[in-house]
Structure formats: structure tokens, C-alpha cells
Image (cartoon, rainbow, N blue to C red; front, top):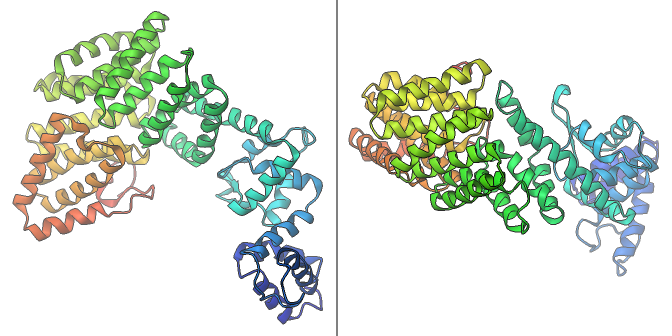
Length: 508
């Protein structure tokens, strides 16, 4: 600290910056080269310009625009940046969320920074508190606070680079969505989920840009994120973007059939089966007309899923019988696994337990070699539900906990909700009524995220009603309400699996 930086000057500076932590943090690095007294003088002059009626230069407690000190502190940081640092600051404002070094290098290296190593420039912005660094070295991410980002965005607009940067940002995250979908089936599922979730804000911004500028890109990107909408608990947002992309597609672009069947599956998982059938039927007609066999397989499966969940069992079986060979012919492994899992659940509802078990075990046989925990979880869910219905709750609980833990690790809200309902029934039948009440409460919380409770599916509604009645019969009213409320109010914002749900994937 320079010798003339008396404590009272530092106190005065903090007061002038309104005690805003960000303003103080941005000002602190400047004290390596200038004194607090000089900064106080500059700040007073700046506030005089903003507030012409200020009594004097030195009265920093006078009335002034809200957070003017913060704005000035950000401006100081900008003035003390090199040209390349200012350019990078402006370009980084295109990221609404945190970002990786790889994303920065792709998006920001346009002239005059093309071919320039930005590593040191970024490190300098971190040292000046313009950019914040977070996460461990192997998974390092960077971000800017909103006020700092907004300042950079103003400069980006002045430079006339916002359109080019937004296009590069869009292209980077379009590619990320595509590669995430391509690598979903396999051992990297938890990692793919975490990587995609970390980029959620950026993916959202890229999709919004697609909707404004490129119908084809919007259709493809919304469909590429199928796994993130369906398997990772983002049904409502996925439905929003899929509906929006389909609405702006006036020309029926080549990607329309795929976006339609993705929207159909997402709609079914929200309990909106009429919409799902309409979308799936349009997808099938379009895919048949264009000889798009993969889309035909998926659309036929989507029809079967919607019909199953609304209780139309005969046509649903017909759809599954057609979809599975189509999927296997064209190598659509995920469609084939989901088709077998959904058909096995339908057979369970029809009382054809042996056929349901055989199909569920076939799902496990296909999924285990790939180390895929998501597809496997559907097989465990059906087998656990079968044992519950057959009156073997003690045998059902391990299978259901296994399914539930996999779904929790991936934030699969739809899968979590349906599994919690069945696990609660197994628990009360196993004499664990307090746990059953807790599970019902947690299930009610998750169903709020999903959409229609129990998806409006007749057998799911009946099973949930039976479970609640048996649990209430087994407990005093006050005990039921206590345990139900504990489950309903559980903090589910953390990725940690609650101890009450742990299975074999994580230690107890």
C-alpha cells in the first residue's frame, strides 16, 4: 500500500463505493499503482458529473445516483485494462452463464484476437476481479457478475461485434447439444448430464438466438437436446423450446419430423397425451412421406407411449410391435430400449407378468454391457413394480432403489416421480409406513415439477391412491402428516442422493 494511503482514506473510499462488495473488489487491484486519495478524488469528480447539485467535491455522502460508485469502479477497471483485455471483456459478455476455456477460445478468437493466445489475458482479467474463476482445476469454469457483464455488453455493442459473437456462441452450443445427444447412451451419462447442466444458461441463449435467426437450427438444436429435456428433468423448458421451434417452422424444414416426435415424448411425460398423439402422428406422416425410417421408429414409439399412459392398451401394443423392429433395423438403440421398457410396463398393467418380466430383463441385458444407467433404470423400475404387484415388497425395494438412484443422479424428474410412487407402495406393504409417508411427500413435490400427477395414467393413479390409503390406515393422522411434510419439503436442489434413497451406485 502506498505510504499516503491512510486508513481514513480507505474507509472514505469504501463508503463512497456504498459498501458494495463488487465495487470494492474491483477497486482493490488499482491500489497497487494509485493511492486511495487519488481514487477518492476521481470518484468525487465523477459523481459531480452525475449529480450536478452535489455540495462539494469532498462530500462523498451527498445524494447521488444509486450504485454510481459501482459503475465508476467498473469503469476504473476498464480504463486500467490493456486493449486486448478490454476486447476480451466485451466478447465474454456474450456468455449469459459460466463458460469453459474451450468455449472462450472458440467464441472470442475473431480479429484482432484471431490466433492470439487468450490464456494470459483471461488470467489478467481474473486477477483484476473482472472475471471470476470457479471449480477444481480439472473442471475449471469462469463467469462474470451481471453488472460487469452488462458493462462489457455495452462496449460489445459499440464495437458492432454483437451479431458475430452471438452467432459464434450459438454455433458452439449447437455443437455441444449435438455431441451430448450422440454420447448419451453409455457410461458417460452422469458426466454428460453435469456438463450439459453447467451450460444450461448458454444453451438457453443459443436456442433463443436460433429461434430469432434460423428456423432449421432451432428445430435441430431443440431436438438434439432430447436427452436433456426428457432424461434430465427439464420437461417444461424442453416443451417450450420445441413448441416455439415448431411454430416458427412455416416451411416444414427437414428437421421437423424429429422435433415433432421429441415434443410428443416430452408431452407424454407431462401427462398431455392428446398433444403427444397429435405430435407423434404428424411426425409419423412426415417421416413416412420422406422415407425417414429412424423418425418413423421414434414416432411410432411415441404413439405407443401416449396410448399406454392414457389407457388405450390394444392400439398401444400394436404401436410397440411396429416400433421395435423399425428401431432395431436402423440401429436406433435408445428407441429400441425405451420401446421394450414401455411395452413391458404396459404388459404389467394388463396383468401379463411373465411377458413383462421377460421384456424388462431384455432391457437390462441390452443396457448392462454399455454401462448405461438410465436405460437400465427403466428395467429395474418395471421389475420392482412387478414384485410390488405380485406381493413381494422386500424383493421389490432394492430394485426400485437402484432405479431411483440412477434417475436421481441424472435429475430425471419424470423417472424419479413414477419410481417414488411405487417404492412408497412397496414400503408400506413391507411394514415401513413412516418411510412410505415420507416417500409420498417427496413424490408429490417432484410431480409438481413434472406436470400432471401420475401423468393421468389410470394404473398409476390407482396405485398412488391405494398406497396413500394403506399408509394413512397404518399411521395416526398426525404421524402421516409429519412424515409426508418432511418428504414434501426436502431440499432437492442438491445433486446428492438422499440417504433414504441410496442404492448400489453410491455408498450408503
